[in-house]
Image (cartoon, rainbow, N blue to C red):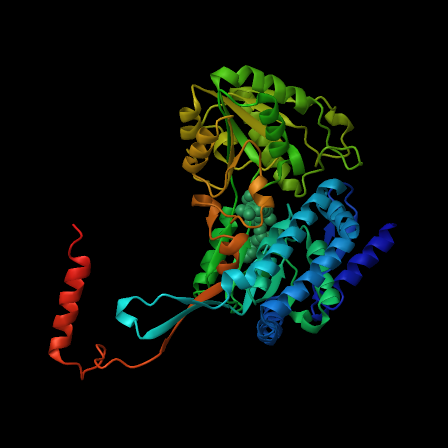
Length: 516
Ligand code: NDP
């Protein structure tokens, strides 16, 4: 497809969504591999964002009225549309984000799976149910249900421009909300494509999912636009700004932030499998993965073998934008500077093994050689700060307990991995790892299990997407009681006799008083 045709695709994708607003300012998104313009998008100002959210409100009401079955059908139509056009979307992701086409396919596959799960499990997770009333309200029926919040604002990053926002969008829609999505300024074409696909697949509720584009100010305007919740995925510093803006209107927030995820390689681990997983977890997507492995703690018993295996594998990696490249460029040029700083600091204090591909042959400076950082000090930025590049630090530790202690010694707490052949040890270490998600004998697997919640602790944020928790995240719990029949004595009435509370006290003494 020629660039002109590609541009047309993007313009078509945006038609009827972002282009409807009158706006004077525009910005370009560019291909990080070539610098070519991928698309031109409006900078939506506060007025345009407010207008979009206001248009979403009646759509939210209609969408909620469809009920679980109506929404499931339409979410199925949407995922069918995405699945049929997977190659077209993957091509756009490749051009705008830079990742290999095959990785884009994998990312879209995950998003489609989550859409399927969210649509088909919403009723079970959120539908009205009777709950036991207990003694004090024995003459009542009690109902619990999870109601939608109205319009949910979603702000997303550029590194997984389909999968990451869809973790909020799919679950918010399945829960009965409309969504206004602000994609990263680096991937607006993908965001616009997703919204245009929705309009095409779900024409009778087209405004239930809309996109606004622009920079940080557009995101800030969405925070202040009176949405029922703001689901943010991005860095911790921006997350703080989003929380501050949302605090003005007491808008609740979901924070999916960065990480510094660790892998523990225990004495009895399958070292070859652990190395393979570590290299993929660290280097795929050029390391621009929030749940990517950035640190490995390997016990003395396996350290040498593990390092040899990792470095052998890393030497074969080659960044590029051709079909054989193992990973693409840094999507955001400025991130490359951070990665280079972390690697050069590590080189000054430890040892660095780089891939064998000649950087002089890389298409431009956005492509970074993979780097394995050996035994760098704990104070090094490569250990303390999120690197978000194709690097992996490996540190020798005495045993798995020391590994766990050092893995947990970070302000982040997103995810992690443990390699051991012992099921009991693996689960024990996973439970004690200070993170929202841990995979044993693999990396990142939890993200592909739609029933499992996704989210972090500490600087990695709070709240959950995916799974039942992810559906509930976009609802408010509603409690209802219905009196079935009146009791002769009503304790919550000024007309109750004094003897009634004495009787209650005696009964409570009999039931609960025996517990010491
Ligand atoms: P940023 O925090 O820079 O940006 C995230 C989003 O926030 C972008 O859409 C950005 O818009 C927008 N934004 C910027 N300023 C404001 C503001 N003042 N108010 C509202 N919105 C604003 O993150 P990146 O896009 O660089 O993404 C990388 C980060 O995301 C990493 O830290 C990574 O770990 C994290 N991440 C976390 C995930 C998780 O699930 N926990 C998943 C994926 C990534 P614009 O781009 O236009 O500036």
